[in-house]
Amino acid sequence: MEVVIKETYEEMSLLAAQLIADVIRRNPRAAIGLATGSTPLGTYRELIGMHRDEELDFSQVISFNLDEYVGLPIDNEQSYHYFMWENLFKHINVTPANVHIPDGLADDLKEACDSYEIEIDDHGGIDVQLLGIGSNGHIAFNEPGSSLGSRTRIKTLTEKTRQDNARFFNSIDEVPKYCVTMGIGTILESRKLVLLANGENKAEAIQATLEGPITVSVPASAIQFHPDVTVIVDRAAASKLTREYHTEPSRFNFQ
Ligand code: PGA
Image 1 (tube, rainbow, N blue to C red):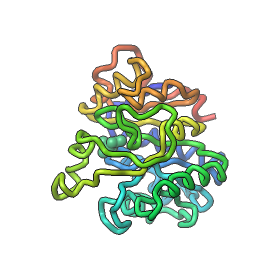
Image 2: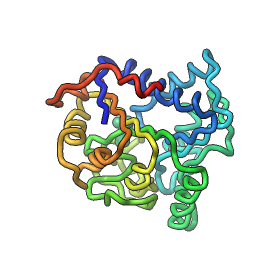
Image 3: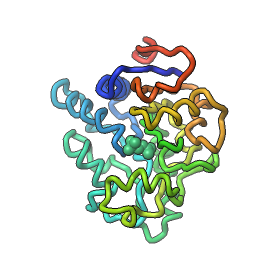
């Protein structure tokens, strides 16, 4: 596991975008796993800039998002479908048919979850998965207590996550209670993981994820099982770490 501490959110975002761009340049048909929330916005801005200024080509890239709320229409501004088109897809040359986001409106949600797993498999798995982390240590919507071997499925959001996400809605009552999310087992099968965290409210979760035991109480700690993880944090999110870490990634990430 490689942990890189950057001084600022902007530097963290640039490095994450460089890692993803590197995967795409080496394999223009790469399958990239994407995340929502405020954390990856800077990374998406950098990727958009690389598309505009450096001809980073997304036309053959396949994307799989981590999660979606249950019951929000895709044109609802809080849906993750809306988020992804607004903050990334409409600014790059992605092919719409190559975009995959879990379907939170399916009549048969369980069937939709199973199909999502099959689609990931049919594309040969995910090459690089971008991850945020919740202040309670969740990854995607795998809340504390989630099985470390879990697959894409319906989950109930914890009160903590609903409160954290209420800032995007008019009130907490509007925050959905259920979601569809890739499982921890699904995430761990990606060939490479890039986990990002910024801000002091993530410091405790980051410390537990990187320096604590692997436990369902901190779902993100499962990344310790993965052979190719880069964790990029800003100085505030790193503030509770006790070991020594790098400020630059090893050159191997760019080979
Ligand atoms: P945030 O959410 O990026 O909005 O902090 C991350 C998460 O909950 O996984």
